[in-house]
Image 1 (cartoon, helix red, strand yellow):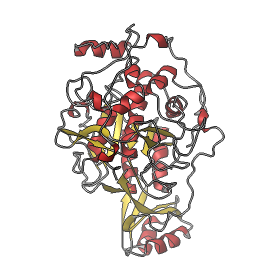
Image 2: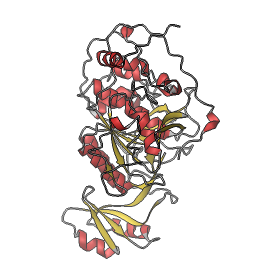
Image 3: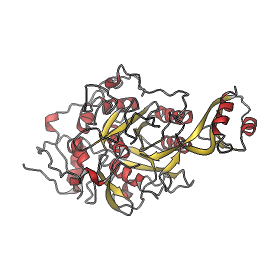
Image 4: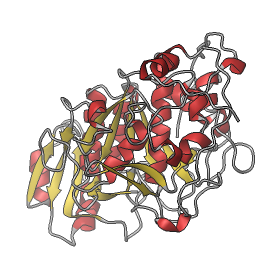
Length: 448
């Protein structure tokens, strides 16, 4: 088959911006990835809205755009979601920002450095303004979402021209905690994020303080996406199970849901996640697998949709993603792939269908409650997060129940220190106190 290649970088950039140029291009013959044995997985409620009307667009005229990145043939996920044709509609806008809440980013990586909002990055692990990666997970995730594309270097990304705000919440071991994650969500919402990518999770119901942070970001027009988890079962996983968060399961190159991917009510959509080639630390590239790799595909596409439809609300972005997805099982929502595997071209072409995601109609969605996590759910030893009702004697109460306390301004809550092993006893006492609005453990989060 004849394959049209536009050599000059400027020509491809203009083609992305115009999106209506008449170019006939055949389907790409991208090379298959390495064998599946090469790498193991790394460790909703939406309201109705008034639809927007898309400008006339003839689907028969959409060009397929192929960037000049040398490892294009290793990115099977981009081909299967229809990225080349989607890029014929738009390559995104640098004013649209994906906040990657993870282990940080290799700030000097040649395929990432030009895409980073480094004047606003933040490290919630070390408490400074340099969100550098000392683990590797965040660098790989960031490259999938928005590596520099058509720059003659490395890999392309679905997000092409969109920007990345690195926010570090995982330490050098790939571990963080839910209170820092809640802080980071609020930080991202306050610093220009349009989409928040959370390729991480913890095995518990959505903590109250985390749901409050999610609601805050949602109220500021931010779409949040999170990994469903890699535990091969119907397993609790926050923040994917929080309201107003899209939970993402992983697929493989055969367009099937990956065997390691979690399933359940918290799964809203699926995306490529197995053997994904992307940026790694030290300016290099490598394969990783997991729902962590699926999630930035969704974030990258959401950013493209936000670029094409800049007035879309989070609900409308969700509808454009979910209602244009490709069913992988029975029609409509299912617990394995949610509404289906994302389709970049159709999401950009069709946009919203004019209601909250139709494929979720008739499903209960995910709502948080006060249910306890499984006993094995890991949490920060000796820490309880507690918030007080207006007028409550906060300082007096925290000293009554714990040895020390730190006020967390962004959460409007206290991190209470108790004796290790006494966390659940303290929870029971605090929840019985009428001045307490909520009390929760400070659950740990891990890169998924």
